[in-house]
Amino acid sequence: MKPIRFYFALFCGKLTIALLKMLKKRATNFPGSVVLTLCPDFLKHLEKPEKIIAVTGTNGKTTCSNMLLDILTDNGYDCTNNNFGGNVDTGISAALLKDSTLTGKATKKYCVLEIDERSAVRVYPYVQPDILIVTNLTRDSYKRNAHVEYIFNILNDNIPDKTHLILNADDLISSSLKKNNKRTYFGMKPFSDEQLIGNNIVRDITACPVCSSPLEYSFLRYNHIGRAKCSKCDFCSPEPDFDTASRVFTPDGRADIEVLHDGKTEKYNVPCENTINLYNATAVTAALRTFGLTEEQLAASFKKINVVRSRYDVTEEKGRTLKCIMAKGQNPVACSHSLNIARNTPDTAVILLWDDYYDRKETSENTAWYYDVDFEFLVNDNIKQIIVAGKRAGDLVLRLLVAGIPEEKISTTEHEVDADRLLDLKISKNIYIFFDMYVDQYKEILKEKIKEMMKNAD
Image (cartoon, rainbow, N blue to C red; front, side):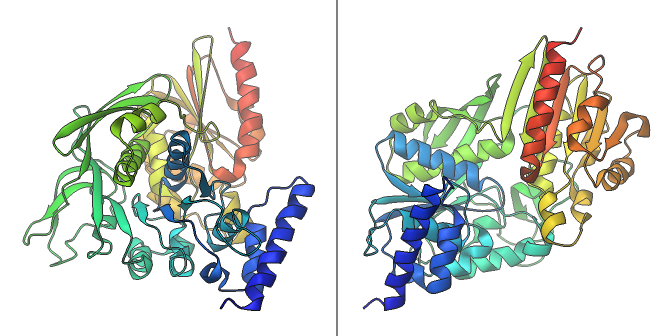
């Protein structure tokens, strides 16, 4: 029998959602905070949808969960979801609360959830995914997440035994999760135009976890993501069940990919502008084919979805291109990927809005993560200007100088929206704004100002 406190929390949560709607506010995490305060084991007693697909991992959670939701919706599945951004226990509680009756019954049969890795201990005992994508595990937000092995252990200890895992075969860390669970692997072969061994600063696994001998990589795409084997024992990367074998990027921020599965080649046109999103699309392919969608259903739905413009936005004007690309702050792998996009583009100006506002507002200052970002990618004659904006411009400039970037290429301002004043369109045809999610409002102002500059250029 469910306790009275559950029904009281349920009523208060529903009332909170109704009040927020009346005030024209988004009912995000707050209703979840209300119900968990009144009933800490609220998720235990709330009925769950029959089929739950979830996503966790360091990079790609939001992109994957949005693609899953869009494709399932396009194929007629009505899904509970937390795509408003609440991926911890309060946000998940709010999402499930919203799609429940006044007696706590689920109103939808299907569910797509993005779940923060650190929240595993508070979520998985009560919300047990039928299918769980683990995108990757790399270092991220050091003060909160410590080392990758710490996050691995949290997931390994809490992911339910019944969950079918969709794991990255090219990630020797996350692919080792929950050895006894049913699993499907996704991966990407090395492409003809890729270097076989990447040159990132960071590599989160260099020794065999079985015998501690050195690992030998047949290729290393970035960080520790690639395919490897132990130099002494039988430990090695697993073989992918869904293996992207080719990709052709198109100017509209998409890619045509071929995925090898069960000896056949499946072809998809996917929203994708970089390597991480190629992995995301491959992971979603593996998950939804495992779920039961046909190749034809998946291909038709992929064509209808696009990259979220708040994360990747392109403007072209009078022969110039402005690209706004979001990268998660305190995440050196995501930021390095952004820089890698710009490194070989001709006549380029890079504007860095990586001031990390979340860190400055809610915790003590920490700029250690700057030194795991591959700013060395910008040591290139193609990069004509680097503009650093924000209160921590000085910290970033120091890191750029350590990377070997000439001081005369660098200019700074403490005010993000003034970065356009330092931009010289006479020498830059391609402009990149790399920004953290917490400075989106400044990015929007700056983007509009630069678009106006481009219109009036020449």
